Length: 264
Image 1 (cartoon, helix red, strand yellow):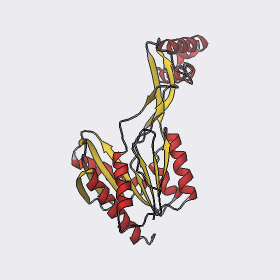
Image 2 (image 1 turned 135 degrees about the horizontal axis):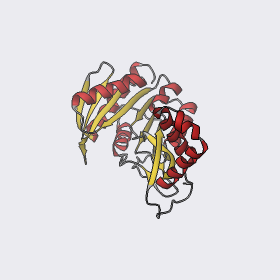
Image 3 (image 1 turned 30 degrees about the vertical axis):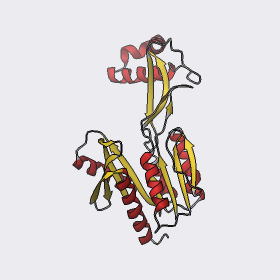
Image 4 (image 1 turned 45 degrees about the vertical axis):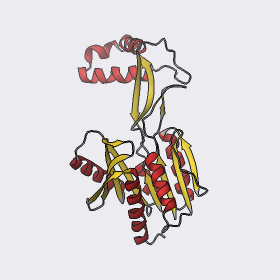
């Protein structure tokens, strides 16, 4: 059996030394990997482990580790694996950034861009409807006020403004490359009720053709204590209280589902 696990969190660069990231450690991903490797009823041929550079990772000669930073690097790594190797199970536990840095600017730079727009388009200032004028000004200002962030930005800047854009949904690409793989997705929320967790987790499952989704809330994650709800296609779910329990359940259920498909 070949398994692919993503773990840890992605990082999106602001400049050459600064970045936006999250606090995902990869501990749950490692627990799941070790549960597969230690399960006597499952013969693991290869385990691909794609993780952030700071994430913890399993140690085994059956594990191939790829460390990434950004969402773009994650997408590239998954595409390489999924287009070149048959993967029976994909556990997508990585905390992927919803937004990446589009451009960096300052209030002064935006002000100069707006001034330039007004001087270059006097007829629009007096004739365009307010909503259309505001949209034009905003687009022009953001497009023309960006400053160079390829190197380290000066710490003398007092009012740095970061414009962000949506990143691609990585989970949505997995079944496009391998429609028959068993896919387990993850959904993390904050201050959500159990009902909200199940509804939102099941929605993620349906949108991305997952076999299961592990839904959890930040309030339920403290050290080794980790409350998670493993949701199935019929919207039934099982609740676990530790990373070890979650890992064992994901391994057992993903293996059973994959066996029933005749994949192994």
